[in-house]
Image (cartoon, rainbow, N blue to C red; front, side):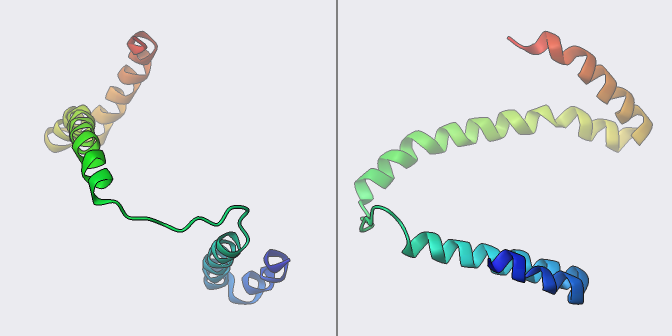
Length: 103
């Protein structure tokens, strides 16, 4: 119901009304989902579990970050030493080779 009423904000305030509508709708939805939930669970903080999760997750995150960063180095080199037209041609090459890179 609030979403329908909040459309008036867009009509009168244009873009600012759209931003206000999105933020207020998100906040209202979060509040409703917090108070109207089927199972109420009290949060617990266990430092040992957090440390174990960090020991496993942090190295995985670092390796994936390094891998994804290395995938963009060639594009950065093309932008630094060439122009955007060459980068566009590189994009077509990557799109042509993408089906072969499935395995």
